[in-house]
Image 1: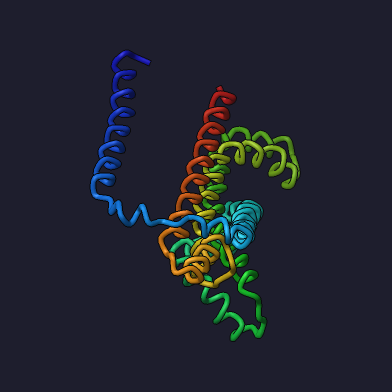
Image 2: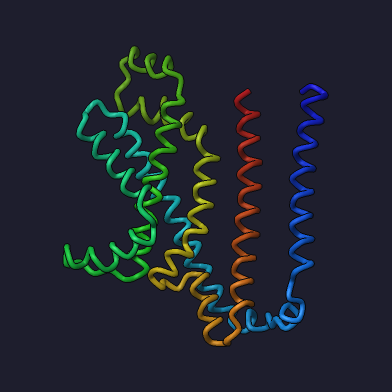
Length: 257
């Protein structure tokens, strides 16, 4: 890296921190300090069991979104590369529908409208799992498709030339490097779904972490403290997960050199 490039990088980094410090100072100068001093976070401890149970449901939804997203996203991404046109159109339609409609609308439709059409009723938690899983699969399909297309064409052609069966080509030649390429993108997307679990809780009242914080607010008539605590938890965990993802991305980049 040149000296000019190093200086530019330092300037960008310190400029970013300077903006953060300025915003922080502005917020501190305009805080309602009497209100802040009246905060009573003791309610958080008193309702710790309910909050922990809610956090467990949040983790369940997050993990489910990741697992369903990777499994079905990979299958749909393979389908999007098929020579069979109707299959490609079907996958494309699925991705467009679930990526371009709000998660809350999907959740409400699955929980309230789908039973009227199919006669199959599900609990709020099951509807939430289905809804966030379907949307995760749509986003992960595009990520996996990009990873598959990033695999060198010559590598795929060599597998064809060797007469390898389709299963072997996908599982031994195409998917391993494709998945390795998109791991950071998959993790970043799952961080987004970790935050999106609050939408599931708000829409279907599944008892997740955000819903538990709302119930603490309603029971104690202290609305700011539980919601501030919930925001802090989402912020810290999301930020830390983002840092881990960045470290992993750098490690994978070094391994490819």
